[in-house]
Image 1 (spheres, rainbow, N blue to C red):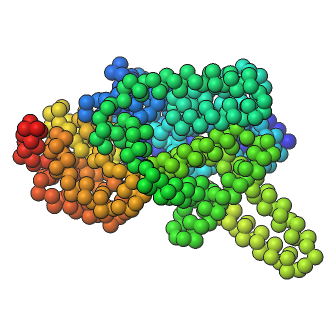
Image 2: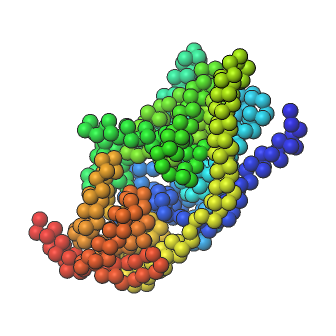
Image 3: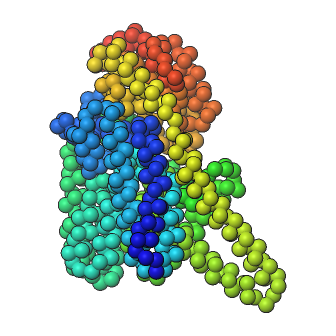
Length: 534
């Protein structure tokens, strides 16, 4: 066993890369580019200023009923300490670092509960701590890290005996639910495992502690969710209405199939970063994902991390029918997947070890070839993670886009009335820079699953009509970043070209990749007259 001081030193060394990455990007130049982080910060601003839990950047500032309140409440401390944007982004970086460190440290202690030999413990933790996705997602204003910290704390409490610890686990699970509604899986998985162990009193204590948190948020959303049925309002305020609008019996099979493919690609990509695209790479990463899942199942069958395994299973079933599947959604499963990957590697080694001692020379030769290939894959995966974590990520975030948005916001603030509305894929961060409300152009996730790219193009061809009917006087286009996650390069170039050539849009400001267009006033007038006649 390693001396305590050496264990502490090793722990700090493994926490250093993520800390270094956050420090190098403490200005948060990518803030708002993923949209959700901007909405979290805008909602936090409303809480800090006593304006309620609202989406201040959206026209009408409706109540925020899509994201639970705890993470924005946490971020509201930033606005209370320093209400000046973007100066407070430096403080926001610190508020990102704390949940990330908490999640990693709790994962370390959770692994220790398995009483593994130290080499295995440290290898598993290193896979997690040095993972580029932990750094990337942990350095943004997303709720995943705070959620993961509460999740791991709840799982640790569930491993402890006694009704009080079960009740504490329920409280922690309730906090996880108020951070991300995905914690609803714990409401099923935790009592199910406790009942399977015939610990009825502990199951009841857990439910009694977690249910009030879930009931409180559900009650809030029931009474405050807007009743509007237009795609824009649904996207910003109602997860379940968004799901119903995009997934039905007509496309559920397609959604599950594509989400399963996305799940395997994302889970495998945690361990072998997709630095090279192509069918062979895709098959390799998905094979790694299957191995990690198999290892997690193997652990659960031995009674290790059973609670985590059932939670992850239920979460996966939810993800498969949800409107999208990506690394962010499955990141809370990463500590279990890392443990599963190490377990499956050990199982593979035991199988190969038997072949090394086989009497048949051809069997021994095949074992050496297989082991060599597996070792090369492991070295490649670990090397890629270290290379990306230590060298690629720190300098990969462009700072020009933040400067472009800041310049666009300053122009809007100086040259437009406060009532002016702006259509933009960067609407939350643009609001923070300019005080001008707006929203993104609505789209349907079902277009992505059905690969109906033409519908994306059509929505942008009708952008003037949308702006006129919704009272938008301006459109901000930030070099195609608005559609970066939804369209391919060719379609994105076509969208930018058609917007630039649209006779109903006049460019009035340009900075870097950001261009502000003014919607033709006569179009807005005509739309207003049409609404009045109705």
